[in-house]
Length: 170
Image (tube, rainbow, N blue to C red):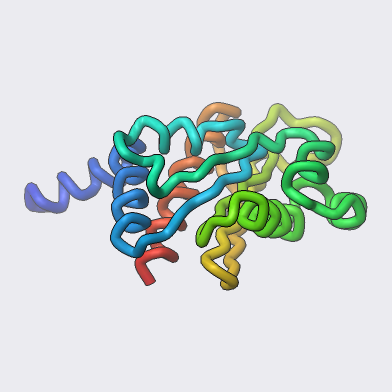
């Protein structure tokens, strides 16, 4: 039987109100700043961050790079990268993270791209890439989420915060 602390911890992990606050606390503790480039999440990550009082010391800003044009013009993704690998790829995700970090002059950047559905042509619904750059070290993770469009977006947002928490605390 799980004790109360384990139950409370599990409830916390599933609570999207708590995880962003933990990320902001880590950023503050380590004196880091964050910028975000969102495609699949469409501003959901930024929206969760700005709910936190005092976040402006750590969160510099974000861009919703939903179209390829915005990925190229605002996040410095190379058009050739999109042509070679597609907008939903680890390469584009990483270039988005690197581009937003450079544009906003932050220590930490985060980017998301993926297919939330419904299925069009050969798209793999639920395929998501999340990239994080901390100073000059980069990480990109691939996920396959299940569920409807909103569930995939929420899972992406939650996992983006969990990855930030993991990599910043290392």
